[in-house]
Image (cartoon, rainbow, N blue to C red):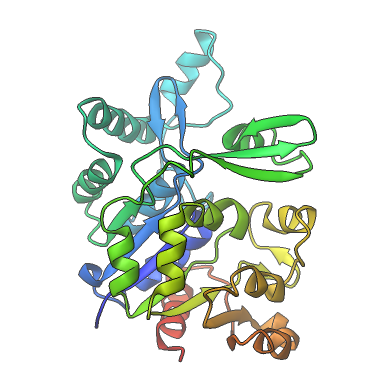
Amino acid sequence: MTLVAALAGGVGAARLLRGMVHVVPSEKLVIIGNTGDDVEFYGLHISPDLDIVMYTLAGIVDENKGWGVSGDTFNCLEMLGKLGFETWFKLGDKDLAVHIARTKFLKEGIRLSEATKRLCQKLGVKAKLVPMTDDRVNTKIISGSLCLDFQEYFVKRKTEDAVTNVVFDGADRAKPAPMVVEALEEAERVIICPSNPILSISPILSISEIKAALKKTDAYVVAVSPIVGGKALKGPADRIMASMGFEVSAYGVAEFYRDFLDHMVIDEVDKHQKKRIEALGVKVTVANTIMKNLEDSVRLAKIVISTK
């Protein structure tokens, strides 16, 4: 099999990718991860979406939450709270070890892409997980007169603010990380994982060279809708799409990606939208897209890889 490239956010992407590694040889899979929600906390560089994918593929993710390390403890966070630090960003002890290692690499002058490669190797992840960029791109949430950092909006304020705009600060200066453009150019198939189109995939596409490569690629571009029955399976994608003027549906997702999309996989409950999506010039496969376990993930991955 030739190269497969995947654009990935957090939990939804990780659940598809845990199946994908059973369908596509790891050396043929390049995962381009969102770093727009990267944040510095306690002086440590944290890459939440990269970590969710990494932990999932390493088999150590907390399955109940979809993020963090299974069985992790929070002794460090508890002590930080006693010392007067804010503790709304829940970082477990094992999780913190990863952030310490990443930050040490970065302070030694190692790029984020290389740091990610080293962490993946140590955790036994064989697929190539690369950040969208080694530069800083920060997703900013605009809510009226407020400008919020992504994690402040997402975790601290629990996505309760009405979103009027989303800005990707630094995207105009950012360059794709090594391997990103090459993967899109050389891939036989590009997969847009079932991630939030605006908060997880758009930061990747905000880097002009990446979006241009996606538009020009000869690869077959397949997306899995993260919207099922008019709702997001996880996170605020539905509310954000609505507040930004997009139809909250599988059709709305297809329309969002229509500039480069060849094929869309939608859930069975949305089969009535098939003809509308096809009218956009996008082929449609109807399937069960709910991934409750590894078997579900493998089943969906096989469908995504075989669409034509």
